[in-house]
Image 1 (cartoon, rainbow, N blue to C red):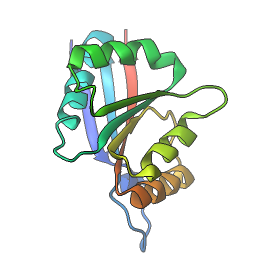
Image 2 (cartoon, rainbow, N blue to C red; image 1 turned 90 degrees about the horizontal axis):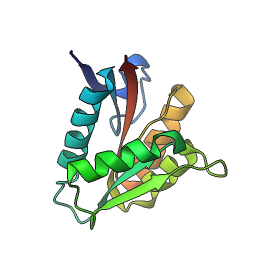
Image 3 (tube, one colour; image 1 turned 180 degrees about the vertical axis):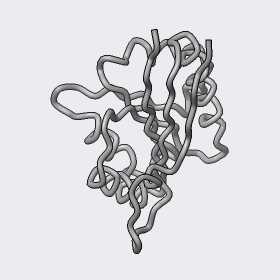
Image 4 (cartoon, helix red, strand yellow; image 1 turned 60 degrees about the vertical axis):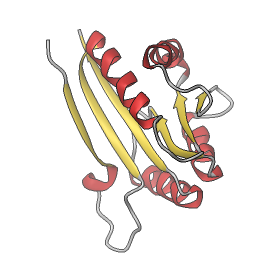
Length: 144
């Protein structure tokens, strides 16, 4: 059993000459669910150790809520500095992520956007810049 992990600035796949980039990254995971379930909580716990007084915010889609809650419990995150949000049909995952980024209360906002095009990256970058925060998008491919 193995897992593949790739972490990169999200704009590595699209380039703009005069843009202010670097606040949005993407982690791409591919592997068996058991291995993914052990790696992602570790990453969240590491992000949670930020020395600033701001939050680690986790924005998940409704279909990942129970899995993400389990990851939160397994990772032993500091609940005093972690904000957990779940998108609903009324508020999309992207909308919730953008709001969390631009409010400036979070040092990092982690999300699970399935598809990130150039326009979405621009929205994420602008919101992260306004809130002086960073975004991490997680893409997962679970291998059976």
